[in-house]
Amino acid sequence: MYNYNIGEIINALSIEFVAIYLRKSRDDKSEEDVLANHRLELVELAKKYNLKYVIYEEIGTSDSIEFRPELKKLLREVKNGVYDAVLVIHPDRLGRGDWADVGEIRKAFKASNTVVITPQKVLDYNDENQELANDMDALMAKHEYRLIKGRLKAGKIRGAKRGRWTNGVPPFPYFYDRNTKSLVVDEAKLPIYRMMVEEYLNGTSLKDIAVKVNKMGVKTHIGKYWSEVKVERVIFSEIHLGRIIYGKTSGSGHKNKPTKPLEIKDRDEWIIVENCHTAIKTLEEHSRMLAIKNAKQKVPKRARNGVYALSGLIKCSKCGYSMRMNNKKTVTKGLKCYVVKCQKTDPFGNQCGHHGIDADILLEAIENELLLYLNEIKSFENPQPSNQYKLDDLLAEKRKELKNAEDGLNRIYNLYVMGKINEEVMNNMSKEQEAMVIKIKNELREIEENFKEVKGISKEERKERIEAALRGLSDNTIETKELNRLLRLIIKEISYKKVQDEVTVEISFY
Ligand SMILES: [Zn+2]
Image 1 (tube, rainbow, N blue to C red):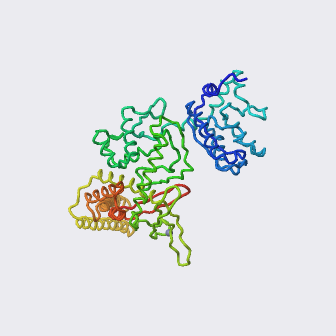
Image 2: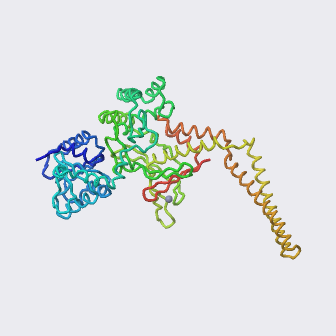
Image 3: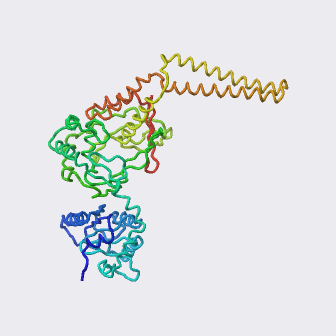
Protein backbone atom coordinates (compact mmCIF):
# COMPACT_ATOMS: atom_id res chain seq x y z
CA MET A 1 0.00 0.00 0.00
CA TYR A 2 1.61 3.25 -1.13
CA ASN A 3 0.61 6.50 0.44
CA TYR A 4 3.16 8.75 -1.18
CA ASN A 5 4.29 9.09 -4.75
CA ILE A 6 7.94 9.53 -5.65
CA GLY A 7 7.61 13.25 -6.24
CA GLU A 8 6.29 13.79 -2.73
CA ILE A 9 9.14 11.82 -1.23
CA ILE A 10 11.74 13.69 -3.35
CA ASN A 11 10.27 17.01 -2.19
CA ALA A 12 9.97 15.95 1.44
CA LEU A 13 13.61 14.86 1.51
CA SER A 14 14.82 17.94 -0.46
CA ILE A 15 16.63 15.78 -2.99
CA GLU A 16 18.36 18.04 -5.53
CA PHE A 17 21.54 16.51 -6.89
CA VAL A 18 21.55 12.97 -8.20
CA ALA A 19 23.50 10.46 -10.26
CA ILE A 20 21.86 8.39 -12.97
CA TYR A 21 23.41 4.95 -13.27
CA LEU A 22 22.82 2.97 -16.45
CA ARG A 23 23.84 -0.57 -17.17
CA LYS A 24 22.62 -3.18 -19.54
CA SER A 25 21.89 -6.44 -17.82
CA ARG A 26 22.79 -9.81 -19.35
CA ASP A 27 19.09 -10.52 -19.54
CA ASP A 28 18.58 -7.55 -21.83
CA LYS A 29 20.14 -9.64 -24.58
CA SER A 30 20.37 -8.09 -27.99
CA GLU A 31 17.78 -5.39 -27.64
CA GLU A 32 19.91 -2.50 -28.79
CA ASP A 33 17.88 0.37 -27.46
CA VAL A 34 17.15 -0.97 -23.99
CA LEU A 35 19.79 1.29 -22.49
CA ALA A 36 18.61 4.27 -24.53
CA ASN A 37 15.06 3.73 -23.25
CA HIS A 38 16.27 3.47 -19.66
CA ARG A 39 18.30 6.62 -20.13
CA LEU A 40 15.30 8.47 -21.48
CA GLU A 41 13.05 7.28 -18.66
CA LEU A 42 15.50 8.26 -15.90
CA VAL A 43 16.40 11.60 -17.51
CA GLU A 44 12.70 12.41 -17.78
CA LEU A 45 12.26 11.48 -14.12
CA ALA A 46 15.13 13.80 -13.13
CA LYS A 47 13.78 16.64 -15.24
CA LYS A 48 10.25 16.18 -13.97
CA TYR A 49 11.38 16.76 -10.39
CA ASN A 50 13.91 19.44 -11.37
CA LEU A 51 16.92 17.42 -10.25
CA LYS A 52 20.45 18.24 -11.35
CA TYR A 53 22.09 15.08 -12.56
CA VAL A 54 25.28 13.40 -13.71
CA ILE A 55 25.05 10.32 -15.93
CA TYR A 56 27.17 7.21 -15.40
CA GLU A 57 26.76 4.76 -18.24
CA GLU A 58 28.37 1.35 -18.13
CA ILE A 59 29.34 -0.23 -21.40
CA GLY A 60 29.83 -3.85 -20.34
CA THR A 61 27.27 -6.16 -18.79
CA SER A 62 29.46 -7.63 -16.07
CA ASP A 63 27.98 -8.09 -12.61
CA SER A 64 31.32 -7.81 -10.88
CA ILE A 65 32.39 -4.35 -9.64
CA GLU A 66 35.87 -5.05 -10.92
CA PHE A 67 34.68 -4.88 -14.50
CA ARG A 68 32.36 -1.93 -14.03
CA PRO A 69 34.54 1.19 -14.14
CA GLU A 70 31.59 3.56 -14.08
CA LEU A 71 30.17 1.94 -10.96
CA LYS A 72 33.58 2.21 -9.31
CA LYS A 73 33.66 5.90 -10.13
CA LEU A 74 30.09 6.34 -8.88
CA LEU A 75 30.73 4.47 -5.61
CA ARG A 76 33.72 6.70 -4.91
CA GLU A 77 31.49 9.75 -5.26
CA VAL A 78 28.68 8.16 -3.27
CA LYS A 79 31.09 7.38 -0.44
CA ASN A 80 32.19 11.02 -0.47
CA GLY A 81 28.60 12.08 -0.06
CA VAL A 82 28.40 13.91 -3.36
CA TYR A 83 24.90 12.85 -4.33
CA ASP A 84 21.58 12.99 -2.52
CA ALA A 85 20.39 9.99 -4.48
CA VAL A 86 21.21 7.58 -7.29
CA LEU A 87 18.60 6.90 -9.96
CA VAL A 88 18.46 3.41 -11.43
CA ILE A 89 15.85 1.57 -13.46
CA HIS A 90 15.89 -1.26 -10.89
CA PRO A 91 18.02 -1.88 -7.80
CA ASP A 92 19.53 -4.96 -9.45
CA ARG A 93 21.37 -2.65 -11.87
CA LEU A 94 23.58 -1.61 -9.01
CA GLY A 95 24.44 -5.10 -7.91
CA ARG A 96 23.34 -8.63 -7.74
CA GLY A 97 26.71 -10.25 -8.34
CA ASP A 98 28.48 -12.08 -5.57
CA TRP A 99 27.67 -11.14 -2.00
CA ALA A 100 30.90 -9.28 -1.32
CA ASP A 101 30.15 -6.85 -4.14
CA VAL A 102 26.60 -6.26 -3.04
CA GLY A 103 27.88 -5.67 0.49
CA GLU A 104 30.37 -3.08 -0.73
CA ILE A 105 27.73 -1.23 -2.71
CA ARG A 106 25.32 -1.23 0.20
CA LYS A 107 28.03 -0.04 2.57
CA ALA A 108 28.80 2.97 0.35
CA PHE A 109 25.16 4.06 0.27
CA LYS A 110 24.71 3.48 3.95
CA ALA A 111 27.85 5.27 5.05
CA SER A 112 26.97 8.40 3.11
CA ASN A 113 23.20 8.36 3.62
CA THR A 114 22.51 8.19 -0.09
CA VAL A 115 19.14 6.86 -1.19
CA VAL A 116 18.30 4.91 -4.32
CA ILE A 117 15.44 6.05 -6.55
CA THR A 118 13.77 3.87 -9.15
CA PRO A 119 10.78 4.91 -11.26
CA GLN A 120 8.67 2.98 -8.74
CA LYS A 121 10.11 3.75 -5.33
CA VAL A 122 12.67 5.37 -3.08
CA LEU A 123 14.97 3.01 -1.19
CA ASP A 124 17.05 3.60 1.92
CA TYR A 125 19.92 1.31 2.89
CA ASN A 126 20.34 2.79 6.33
CA ASP A 127 18.45 0.46 8.57
CA GLU A 128 20.96 -1.55 10.61
CA ASN A 129 18.79 -4.60 11.02
CA GLN A 130 17.63 -5.02 7.50
CA GLU A 131 19.39 -7.06 4.91
CA LEU A 132 17.17 -5.54 2.31
CA ALA A 133 16.72 -1.88 1.65
CA ASN A 134 13.84 -0.04 3.24
CA ASP A 135 11.11 1.18 1.05
CA MET A 136 10.97 4.87 1.82
CA ASP A 137 7.26 4.91 1.40
CA ALA A 138 6.90 2.81 4.53
CA LEU A 139 9.13 5.19 6.49
CA MET A 140 7.24 8.18 5.19
CA ALA A 141 4.06 6.64 6.41
CA LYS A 142 5.56 6.51 9.88
CA HIS A 143 6.31 10.26 9.65
CA GLU A 144 9.98 9.58 9.93
CA TYR A 145 10.89 11.62 6.92
CA ARG A 146 12.02 14.67 8.89
CA LEU A 147 14.65 12.58 10.63
CA ILE A 148 15.63 10.99 7.37
CA LYS A 149 15.87 14.33 5.65
CA GLY A 150 18.27 15.66 8.28
CA ARG A 151 20.38 12.57 7.99
CA LEU A 152 20.44 12.72 4.17
CA LYS A 153 21.57 16.32 4.12
CA ALA A 154 24.41 15.88 6.57
CA GLY A 155 27.79 16.09 4.91
CA LYS A 156 26.47 16.72 1.44
CA ILE A 157 28.11 20.13 1.10
CA ARG A 158 30.35 19.11 -1.73
CA GLY A 159 27.47 17.85 -3.79
CA ALA A 160 25.44 20.97 -3.16
CA LYS A 161 28.18 23.07 -4.70
CA ARG A 162 28.03 21.14 -7.92
CA GLY A 163 25.47 22.48 -10.26
CA ARG A 164 26.03 25.95 -8.92
CA TRP A 165 27.71 28.54 -11.08
CA THR A 166 31.23 29.23 -9.85
CA ASN A 167 32.98 30.04 -13.10
CA GLY A 168 32.95 33.84 -13.04
CA VAL A 169 31.30 35.93 -15.74
CA PRO A 170 28.43 33.90 -17.22
CA PRO A 171 28.34 33.46 -20.98
CA PHE A 172 25.99 35.52 -23.17
CA PRO A 173 22.95 35.60 -22.81
CA TYR A 174 22.90 34.31 -19.22
CA PHE A 175 23.25 36.29 -16.04
CA TYR A 176 24.07 35.14 -12.54
CA ASP A 177 21.36 34.98 -9.92
CA ARG A 178 22.82 35.44 -6.45
CA ASN A 179 19.88 33.88 -4.67
CA THR A 180 19.82 30.59 -6.50
CA LYS A 181 23.56 30.72 -7.26
CA SER A 182 22.74 29.69 -10.76
CA LEU A 183 22.38 31.08 -14.27
CA VAL A 184 19.24 32.77 -15.56
CA VAL A 185 18.48 33.62 -19.17
CA ASP A 186 18.34 37.30 -20.05
CA GLU A 187 15.11 37.29 -22.01
CA ALA A 188 16.04 40.47 -23.89
CA LYS A 189 19.22 38.93 -25.22
CA LEU A 190 17.84 35.46 -25.86
CA PRO A 191 16.53 36.25 -29.40
CA ILE A 192 20.05 37.37 -30.39
CA TYR A 193 21.50 34.10 -29.20
CA ARG A 194 18.82 32.10 -30.96
CA MET A 195 19.50 34.04 -34.13
CA MET A 196 23.22 33.16 -33.94
CA VAL A 197 22.43 29.46 -33.57
CA GLU A 198 19.86 29.46 -36.36
CA GLU A 199 22.07 31.45 -38.73
CA TYR A 200 24.89 28.98 -38.18
CA LEU A 201 22.55 26.05 -38.79
CA ASN A 202 21.51 27.74 -42.05
CA GLY A 203 25.10 27.89 -43.21
CA THR A 204 26.03 31.49 -42.34
CA SER A 205 29.73 31.85 -41.53
CA LEU A 206 30.89 32.80 -38.05
CA LYS A 207 32.34 36.00 -39.45
CA ASP A 208 29.04 37.03 -41.05
CA ILE A 209 27.18 36.24 -37.83
CA ALA A 210 29.59 38.39 -35.84
CA VAL A 211 29.17 41.26 -38.30
CA LYS A 212 25.41 40.95 -38.21
CA VAL A 213 25.26 41.09 -34.40
CA ASN A 214 27.70 43.99 -34.28
CA LYS A 215 25.54 45.91 -36.76
CA MET A 216 22.56 45.33 -34.50
CA GLY A 217 24.51 47.16 -31.81
CA VAL A 218 24.59 44.21 -29.43
CA LYS A 219 27.85 43.78 -27.53
CA THR A 220 29.27 40.74 -25.77
CA HIS A 221 28.66 40.21 -22.05
CA ILE A 222 31.77 42.27 -21.27
CA GLY A 223 30.85 45.08 -23.64
CA LYS A 224 33.10 44.10 -26.53
CA TYR A 225 32.39 43.69 -30.23
CA TRP A 226 31.73 40.19 -31.48
CA SER A 227 34.37 38.32 -33.44
CA GLU A 228 34.10 34.94 -35.10
CA VAL A 229 35.96 33.37 -32.19
CA LYS A 230 33.54 34.90 -29.69
CA VAL A 231 30.49 33.79 -31.67
CA GLU A 232 31.95 30.31 -31.99
CA ARG A 233 32.59 30.15 -28.27
CA VAL A 234 28.98 30.91 -27.27
CA ILE A 235 27.17 28.93 -29.93
CA PHE A 236 29.24 25.80 -29.29
CA SER A 237 29.28 26.15 -25.51
CA GLU A 238 27.78 23.25 -23.57
CA ILE A 239 26.68 25.63 -20.85
CA HIS A 240 23.86 26.65 -23.17
CA LEU A 241 22.65 23.05 -23.04
CA GLY A 242 21.93 23.54 -19.34
CA ARG A 243 25.18 21.88 -18.34
CA ILE A 244 27.95 22.84 -15.99
CA ILE A 245 31.18 20.98 -16.49
CA TYR A 246 33.73 20.41 -13.74
CA GLY A 247 37.24 19.05 -13.92
CA LYS A 248 37.75 20.03 -17.56
CA THR A 249 41.19 21.36 -16.82
CA SER A 250 43.53 20.85 -13.95
CA GLY A 251 45.91 23.33 -12.41
CA SER A 252 45.17 26.98 -11.77
CA GLY A 253 46.54 29.72 -13.95
CA HIS A 254 48.43 32.28 -11.91
CA LYS A 255 48.23 35.54 -13.75
CA ASN A 256 51.46 37.11 -12.62
CA LYS A 257 53.73 34.12 -12.81
CA PRO A 258 55.90 33.50 -15.82
CA THR A 259 54.62 29.93 -16.07
CA LYS A 260 51.13 28.66 -16.57
CA PRO A 261 50.05 25.25 -15.38
CA LEU A 262 47.43 24.19 -17.81
CA GLU A 263 46.00 20.85 -18.75
CA ILE A 264 42.89 19.98 -20.64
CA LYS A 265 41.76 16.63 -19.33
CA ASP A 266 40.26 13.72 -21.13
CA ARG A 267 36.50 14.13 -21.48
CA ASP A 268 36.02 10.82 -19.68
CA GLU A 269 37.33 12.51 -16.57
CA TRP A 270 35.03 15.53 -16.74
CA ILE A 271 32.02 15.75 -14.47
CA ILE A 272 29.09 16.93 -16.52
CA VAL A 273 26.17 18.12 -14.43
CA GLU A 274 22.94 18.35 -16.40
CA ASN A 275 19.81 20.40 -15.82
CA CYS A 276 21.64 23.15 -13.90
CA HIS A 277 19.84 26.02 -15.62
CA THR A 278 17.53 26.59 -18.60
CA ALA A 279 18.90 25.15 -21.83
CA ILE A 280 18.56 27.56 -24.77
CA LYS A 281 19.55 25.23 -27.56
CA THR A 282 18.68 21.58 -28.02
CA LEU A 283 21.09 18.67 -28.10
CA GLU A 284 19.92 18.07 -31.64
CA GLU A 285 20.87 21.62 -32.67
CA HIS A 286 24.17 21.29 -30.86
CA SER A 287 25.02 18.06 -32.69
CA ARG A 288 24.02 19.50 -36.04
CA MET A 289 26.26 22.51 -35.46
CA LEU A 290 29.15 20.19 -34.58
CA ALA A 291 28.55 18.28 -37.80
CA ILE A 292 28.60 21.50 -39.83
CA LYS A 293 31.77 22.62 -38.09
CA ASN A 294 33.39 19.28 -38.70
CA ALA A 295 32.57 19.38 -42.41
CA LYS A 296 34.00 22.90 -42.65
CA GLN A 297 37.24 21.97 -40.96
CA LYS A 298 38.25 18.64 -42.44
CA VAL A 299 41.83 19.76 -41.96
CA PRO A 300 42.47 21.71 -38.74
CA LYS A 301 43.71 25.23 -39.29
CA ARG A 302 46.90 24.61 -37.35
CA ALA A 303 48.01 21.69 -39.48
CA ARG A 304 47.81 23.10 -42.97
CA ASN A 305 50.72 23.30 -45.39
CA GLY A 306 52.88 20.81 -43.56
CA VAL A 307 54.42 23.69 -41.63
CA TYR A 308 53.16 23.79 -38.11
CA ALA A 309 52.49 26.91 -36.14
CA LEU A 310 55.03 26.00 -33.47
CA SER A 311 57.81 24.63 -35.67
CA GLY A 312 61.28 25.50 -34.45
CA LEU A 313 59.99 26.97 -31.19
CA ILE A 314 59.74 24.04 -28.83
CA LYS A 315 62.70 22.94 -26.77
CA CYS A 316 62.76 19.82 -24.62
CA SER A 317 62.73 20.78 -20.93
CA LYS A 318 64.75 17.67 -20.10
CA CYS A 319 67.61 17.86 -22.62
CA GLY A 320 67.22 21.16 -24.49
CA TYR A 321 66.86 19.47 -27.86
CA SER A 322 64.40 20.90 -30.41
CA MET A 323 61.16 18.94 -30.43
CA ARG A 324 59.30 17.95 -33.58
CA MET A 325 55.61 18.12 -34.49
CA ASN A 326 53.35 15.56 -35.97
CA ASN A 327 49.76 15.19 -37.12
CA LYS A 328 47.83 12.35 -35.61
CA LYS A 329 44.44 11.05 -36.53
CA THR A 330 42.36 10.56 -33.41
CA VAL A 331 38.99 8.93 -33.07
CA THR A 332 37.36 11.73 -31.13
CA LYS A 333 39.02 14.87 -32.45
CA GLY A 334 39.96 14.05 -36.05
CA LEU A 335 43.32 15.26 -37.32
CA LYS A 336 45.30 16.96 -34.56
CA CYS A 337 48.75 18.43 -34.18
CA TYR A 338 51.00 16.98 -31.50
CA VAL A 339 54.50 17.60 -30.26
CA VAL A 340 56.33 14.30 -30.68
CA LYS A 341 58.06 12.63 -27.75
CA CYS A 342 61.69 13.84 -27.55
CA GLN A 343 63.83 11.82 -29.97
CA LYS A 344 67.23 12.96 -28.72
CA THR A 345 69.55 10.13 -27.80
CA ASP A 346 72.60 10.50 -25.60
CA PRO A 347 76.03 9.19 -26.67
CA PHE A 348 75.05 5.82 -25.26
CA GLY A 349 71.91 5.52 -27.32
CA ASN A 350 69.45 6.25 -24.52
CA GLN A 351 66.48 8.20 -25.79
CA CYS A 352 65.49 11.28 -23.78
CA GLY A 353 61.83 10.37 -24.25
CA HIS A 354 60.34 13.54 -22.71
CA HIS A 355 56.62 13.02 -23.42
CA GLY A 356 54.74 14.68 -26.25
CA ILE A 357 51.77 17.03 -25.90
CA ASP A 358 48.69 18.31 -27.70
CA ALA A 359 49.80 21.46 -29.56
CA ASP A 360 46.51 23.19 -28.70
CA ILE A 361 47.52 23.26 -25.02
CA LEU A 362 50.68 25.17 -25.95
CA LEU A 363 48.82 27.53 -28.29
CA GLU A 364 46.37 28.37 -25.53
CA ALA A 365 49.21 29.04 -23.08
CA ILE A 366 50.93 31.26 -25.67
CA GLU A 367 47.80 33.30 -26.17
CA ASN A 368 47.42 33.82 -22.42
CA GLU A 369 51.06 34.75 -21.94
CA LEU A 370 51.06 37.15 -24.88
CA LEU A 371 48.09 38.98 -23.41
CA LEU A 372 49.87 39.28 -20.06
CA TYR A 373 53.06 40.42 -21.75
CA LEU A 374 51.17 43.05 -23.70
CA ASN A 375 49.65 44.43 -20.51
CA GLU A 376 53.03 44.48 -18.85
CA ILE A 377 54.54 46.48 -21.68
CA LYS A 378 51.67 48.92 -21.69
CA SER A 379 52.10 49.62 -17.99
CA PHE A 380 55.89 49.69 -18.13
CA GLU A 381 56.94 53.28 -17.64
CA ASN A 382 60.40 53.88 -18.93
CA PRO A 383 61.78 56.60 -21.13
CA GLN A 384 62.34 55.25 -24.60
CA PRO A 385 66.07 55.27 -25.28
CA SER A 386 66.85 56.79 -28.66
CA ASN A 387 69.18 54.00 -29.57
CA GLN A 388 70.52 50.81 -28.17
CA TYR A 389 74.18 51.77 -28.16
CA LYS A 390 73.64 54.54 -25.66
CA LEU A 391 72.17 51.99 -23.30
CA ASP A 392 75.13 49.70 -23.93
CA ASP A 393 77.49 52.52 -23.02
CA LEU A 394 75.56 53.37 -19.90
CA LEU A 395 75.62 49.75 -18.84
CA ALA A 396 79.40 49.47 -19.31
CA GLU A 397 79.88 52.71 -17.41
CA LYS A 398 77.80 51.52 -14.46
CA ARG A 399 79.59 48.18 -14.31
CA LYS A 400 82.91 50.01 -14.12
CA GLU A 401 81.54 52.28 -11.41
CA LEU A 402 80.42 49.27 -9.39
CA LYS A 403 83.82 47.64 -9.69
CA ASN A 404 85.51 50.83 -8.48
CA ALA A 405 83.17 51.07 -5.49
CA GLU A 406 83.83 47.43 -4.55
CA ASP A 407 87.58 47.96 -4.92
CA GLY A 408 87.28 50.95 -2.63
CA LEU A 409 85.62 48.83 0.01
CA ASN A 410 88.43 46.30 -0.22
CA ARG A 411 91.01 49.06 0.14
CA ILE A 412 89.38 50.17 3.38
CA TYR A 413 89.55 46.62 4.78
CA ASN A 414 93.19 46.39 3.71
CA LEU A 415 94.05 49.65 5.46
CA TYR A 416 92.57 48.24 8.66
CA VAL A 417 94.31 44.87 8.27
CA MET A 418 97.60 46.68 7.64
CA GLY A 419 97.06 48.68 10.85
CA LYS A 420 96.91 52.05 9.09
CA ILE A 421 93.42 52.87 10.44
CA ASN A 422 91.68 51.85 13.64
CA GLU A 423 88.42 49.90 13.87
CA GLU A 424 86.21 52.93 14.43
CA VAL A 425 87.48 54.72 11.34
CA MET A 426 87.25 51.50 9.33
CA ASN A 427 83.60 51.06 10.40
CA ASN A 428 82.67 54.61 9.46
CA MET A 429 84.42 54.49 6.13
CA SER A 430 83.14 51.08 5.14
CA LYS A 431 79.55 51.91 6.10
CA GLU A 432 79.58 54.81 3.69
CA GLN A 433 81.30 52.78 0.99
CA GLU A 434 78.86 49.83 1.40
CA ALA A 435 75.93 52.20 0.92
CA MET A 436 77.58 53.42 -2.25
CA VAL A 437 78.03 49.85 -3.55
CA ILE A 438 74.37 49.06 -2.93
CA LYS A 439 73.24 52.25 -4.64
CA ILE A 440 75.28 51.51 -7.75
CA LYS A 441 74.16 47.87 -7.77
CA ASN A 442 70.52 48.95 -7.77
CA GLU A 443 71.11 51.41 -10.57
CA LEU A 444 72.85 48.72 -12.57
CA ARG A 445 69.99 46.29 -12.04
CA GLU A 446 67.47 48.85 -13.18
CA ILE A 447 69.44 49.52 -16.37
CA GLU A 448 69.83 45.81 -16.96
CA GLU A 449 66.09 45.34 -16.64
CA ASN A 450 65.42 48.18 -19.06
CA PHE A 451 68.00 46.74 -21.35
CA LYS A 452 66.19 43.40 -21.32
CA GLU A 453 63.00 45.21 -22.10
CA VAL A 454 64.28 47.03 -25.16
CA LYS A 455 67.06 44.74 -26.31
CA GLY A 456 67.12 44.86 -30.08
CA ILE A 457 63.49 45.82 -30.48
CA SER A 458 61.86 49.04 -29.39
CA LYS A 459 58.93 48.94 -27.01
CA GLU A 460 56.55 50.04 -29.75
CA GLU A 461 57.78 47.41 -32.13
CA ARG A 462 57.51 44.69 -29.51
CA LYS A 463 53.95 45.78 -28.81
CA GLU A 464 53.12 45.57 -32.49
CA ARG A 465 54.65 42.10 -32.76
CA ILE A 466 52.64 40.81 -29.80
CA GLU A 467 49.45 42.25 -31.23
CA ALA A 468 50.17 40.69 -34.62
CA ALA A 469 50.81 37.29 -33.00
CA LEU A 470 47.55 37.56 -31.04
CA ARG A 471 45.63 38.46 -34.20
CA GLY A 472 47.24 35.48 -35.91
CA LEU A 473 46.20 33.15 -33.11
CA SER A 474 42.56 34.14 -33.31
CA ASP A 475 42.40 34.17 -37.12
CA ASN A 476 40.78 31.02 -38.44
CA THR A 477 41.88 31.66 -41.99
CA ILE A 478 45.58 32.31 -41.38
CA GLU A 479 48.14 30.08 -43.09
CA THR A 480 50.08 28.03 -40.56
CA LYS A 481 53.33 29.17 -42.13
CA GLU A 482 52.37 32.80 -41.56
CA LEU A 483 51.29 32.11 -37.95
CA ASN A 484 54.64 30.42 -37.35
CA ARG A 485 56.44 33.48 -38.75
CA LEU A 486 54.45 35.83 -36.49
CA LEU A 487 55.11 33.72 -33.39
CA ARG A 488 58.82 33.46 -34.12
CA LEU A 489 59.10 37.24 -34.26
CA ILE A 490 58.24 37.48 -30.59
CA ILE A 491 58.89 34.05 -29.05
CA LYS A 492 62.39 32.76 -28.51
CA GLU A 493 61.47 29.33 -27.25
CA ILE A 494 58.79 27.29 -25.52
CA SER A 495 59.24 24.37 -23.18
CA TYR A 496 56.86 22.42 -21.04
CA LYS A 497 56.90 20.02 -18.13
CA LYS A 498 54.36 17.56 -16.91
CA VAL A 499 54.24 16.55 -13.30
CA GLN A 500 51.48 14.04 -12.70
CA ASP A 501 48.51 15.64 -14.44
CA GLU A 502 49.70 19.21 -14.41
CA VAL A 503 51.35 20.76 -17.44
CA THR A 504 53.54 23.79 -16.94
CA VAL A 505 54.37 25.80 -20.04
CA GLU A 506 57.34 28.14 -20.08
CA ILE A 507 57.62 30.72 -22.81
CA SER A 508 60.62 32.91 -23.36
CA PHE A 509 60.01 36.09 -25.33
CA TYR A 510 62.30 38.45 -27.16
ZN1 LIG B 1 64.72 15.66 -24.57
